[in-house]
Length: 317
Image 1: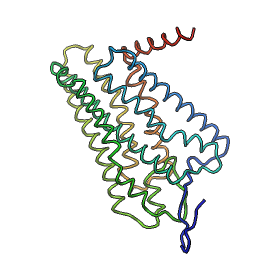
Image 2 (image 1 turned 90 degrees about the vertical axis):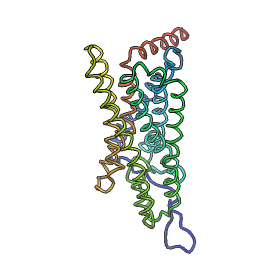
Image 3 (image 1 turned 135 degrees about the vertical axis):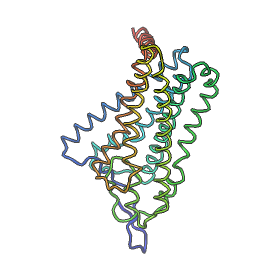
Image 4 (image 1 turned 30 degrees about the vertical axis):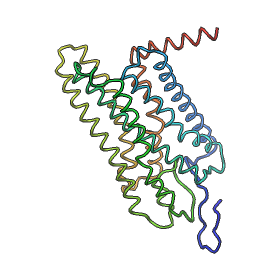
């Protein structure tokens, strides 16, 4: 599993072992079933929203374009790690190649960064819609919406590129065991032959910037939104706005809270079990709940889903 270089006293790593959840076989099968069900529901829920938004032209407006992109992103985000987790539950070796590990690392972090940025853009969209309702149609045009979405994806896939390249060029020797469910920078730094404090600092600085920066932007946006909502004369309008903001903030808190535990406070010495649970929260739990929180409670989305379902049933018959 570890291949030695000629005339070298180190056994350099060519593949890693992702320990995941090390437990007895029956528990492994139970976790496999649970994760597989969660994965299937996440793909189905987010995929249904993407199809509904694509098929209903009435929903081709900025708010739903953001939701559609968010659901599309969630499909790829959960798919960057979950299939390998499922394979490892049924495998005795639990290995992942060196290239495979860093590809997973890159896509998982890139998609996660894109999600942070897209959540901030969605908060900005709600701020304009509620606090600047008269100017909203002129400000949030389809052209601006497209540019914002493209910027989120481009920045997301460029943000961690340099630190990931730097980590991949480090020498890994000795043990190749990663006590985690995904390829993560913390365990990889621990396996390096030589410490790299500059790369470590760069990685956690970029993590802090993208997490705290977007979180504070979202918090500021919704503070202004809630202030505007409290001034609304209509009780129905206040209730609807509070419901939307509350749902969004609940998911933001869950997603960003677990991210902060993992990547902003690496020096606190979190246990391996806590790291795995925190990772599962933002890697699997939030993508599962997001369709229900953001879209299935929306009358227009539910109507579009019924329309798509009716179309499918008619063609099956």
